[in-house]
Image (cartoon, rainbow, N blue to C red; front, side, top):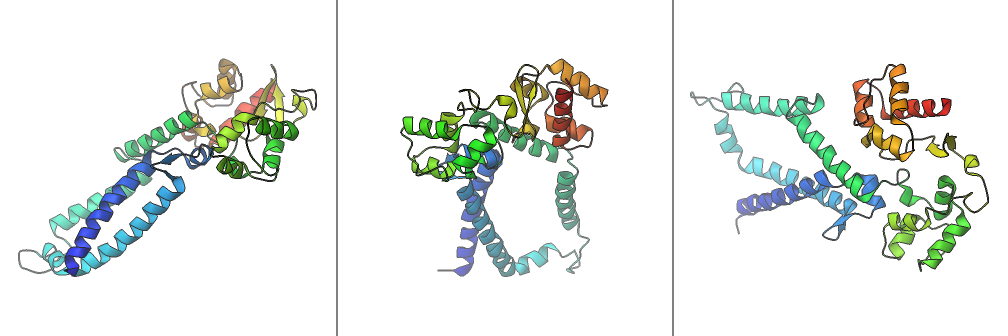
Length: 292
């Protein structure tokens, strides 16, 4: 067997594998959604696809170094001018450098067409978010049932009863939603769907207005103090619809605070337009809601 051929063929196969993992990681939902919905493709979840991509990349880099050493003579020929002398001012090398720098600067400064590639990536991930649904907060699947119920204003006893009624097996409330889901061949999202209506106050216990960390807007709308995961990807209209807010009044309030916005714009787009963080825009919306 020839060592040079082994290196070249392995590089080809690893390159093909990297293309597959790159495409998969390009289109899968955001991590918080993938973990929440227990997303998988060909039996592999996000973590496995990421690990496969990383290890393939490391091997590709290692083999590329060996391949470069084995073919160094050919590479030096590419750098030689007509006088057979190596030069860094050869036209082909200059073009290669310009293209490489363009990719770097175009990505940092979001020049087309590089910005289009990034925007398309965001579009694919947003589609995944809409299809699979957002968790109530980042990595909610890692919260214990007890902690999750407290954070969401749910009655723990009723949550446990609903899980038992649905034949969901769990040891105690100190198990995480992820553990409960894995033990029952479910996604954490499905566990949440079974208990999400067990709100404190809906059975005569604590009034909704007294749930820790939440406020009440006119019309009994609950607006969290902290923006739910994925808020930046949602449009202003979606936020208003989700929390039963009057979109025109919200837009008017933002305008009064020097923020021109439209219902079809995402919170992230509005924030970017005014050099702010999406949390700042959400906080302003919440502020207007409180004043109402």
